[in-house]
Amino acid sequence: MGQGIAHISALAGFNTRLYDKDKSTLEAAMAAVEQTLSKGVELGKITNADRVRTLERLTPAMTVEHGVEDAGLVIEAIPEDINLKKDLFRQVADSVPEETVLASNTSSLSITEIASGIPSPDRVVGMHFFNPPHIIKLLEVIRGEKSASEIVDRVCEIGRQMDREVVLISDSPGFASSRLGVVLGLEAIRMLEQGVASAADIDAAMVHGYRHPIGPLRLTDLVGLDVRLAIAQYLHEKLGSSQFEPPKLLQEMVRDGLLGKKSGKGFYCWKE
Ligand SMILES: NC(=O)c1ccc[n+]([C@@H]2O[C@H](COP(=O)([O-])OP(=O)(O)OC[C@H]3O[C@@H](n4cnc5c(N)ncnc54)[C@H](O)[C@@H]3O)[C@@H](O)[C@H]2O)c1
Image 1 (tube, rainbow, N blue to C red):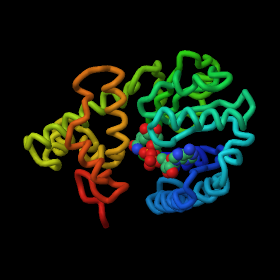
Image 2: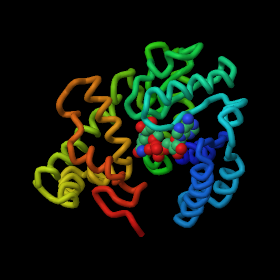
Image 3: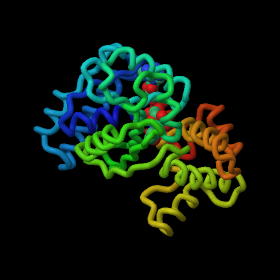
Image 4: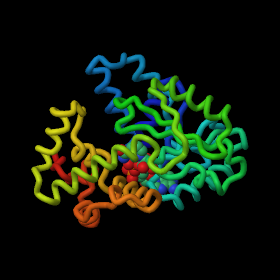
């Protein structure tokens, strides 16, 4: 997600630095942005001048401190784990002035809690982008309990400058999109587990019957089964409803390293 958010940010005209603690992931992410932009030119979605300018605006950073220095806005997209996010927010807050706006791309976690360990939690908001960001235009902006109205307004405006369809949501587990989307995805996994139909037929039912652009199991493969499991566990804990209880099959697949597209196999085979 970090790679995709950096891509659309630089494309929209913002000078953007991308950081990942894993150097090879960072290199792969920079190469992937270049590849996606070239494909965009080939398909006539962007001009070659857009591609060149976007690459000029996007630079890799080798440390968190270098990544965030002078930034007006920092967008975090590390794994869906509240403690990891809180630690990183503390580290970032130590490296930037109090005016720097801090956003999390969390799919479900509490923005209020992420903001709780740093000075000036009023400058923290959620910016929930969708996968892949250069194609899916929705941006959920999440207002934490302490988020300042002018910061929320500014972030909505930045989202629109990034060509997003912005929706504003109060801080509540899973916001709007994950809370609804995860129910569908988990139920599809339960149906597969119970032998109701094949993955392809469950997906086809939603694509052709309900005009979803993609079926819930294929979407789970794209999101990452580990990411979906983390969200389901969190929503189950916070909202208590059995509809969020992670199905056994999902837990077993994550345990076996079947994470979807990123690992080459999930409900579908993604090898070349
Ligand atoms: N996958 C999706 O479709 C999707 C969509 C919307 C939002 N999200 C959210 O975005 C976030 C990231 O999800 P993802 O699927 O991109 O995860 P991912 O596991 O693919 O990528 C996370 C990256 O963070 C890096 N990382 C870990 N700790 C770090 C640290 N302390 N500093 C810097 N980098 C660090 C890892 O090396 C990894 O490359 C999660 O909060 C997730 O819920 C995911």
